[in-house]
Image (cartoon, rainbow over all chains, first blue to last red; front, side):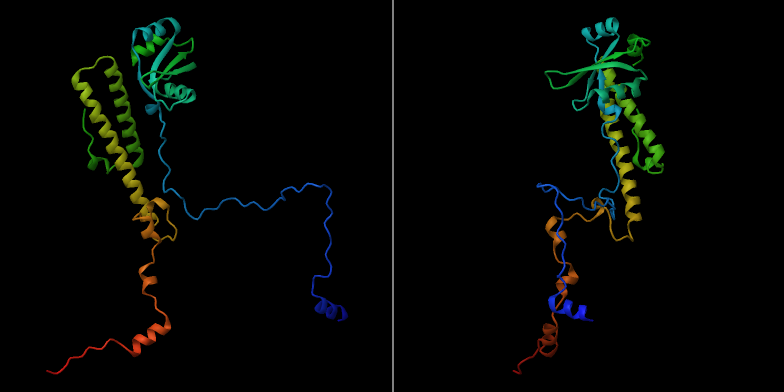
Length: 133
Length: 123
């Protein structure tokens, strides 16, 4: 009872313990981080893949230098979408023509299109693949 | 090359539509190859048709998808943002008709006690 009267008179802030600070620097305290639980999807339906294999590879090249590359170096040359990267090109060629690419070299032509040299693995013949297409 | 008809496409289900889309894209790819290899004029004409076919297929796919989703969300409270009414930004933030209609008690009493009277003067 006496303690209650004392608390009522003084207010309840009498005792407060000081935190022990072991370093002079103040670092961000760790707080609660909640994961997202959206009440509705922002977009009703996710888009179909925008860079599918048909978008990446536009058409093969059949210039004289391209033919040389097919015969001598076992590589195919394609005109490719400018926004495609080498991983996408490799994947697209695999899906379209069922061939594995050893490496892909790309360059952007002066007329703004992207050219890709796709070197095929040794067990496939570039000439066969080119004739099939 | 056959022009794909939209009303025929609408009877198909999603898997078949995606297959049709894939076939059309393959056709377009082969036409592009022929263009590079010096195709005839008729083949080049087909390229335009192929592109429109792809567009038609995609339209049907997206239209039916969104229609179904609207049905699904009809009774729900929160709907996705692209299914909501578009109008304009200002109109979406404007007061609703109910909110515009609201009156204070004071105003209601005034209108009740002192309505607009109609009268005529005898000639």
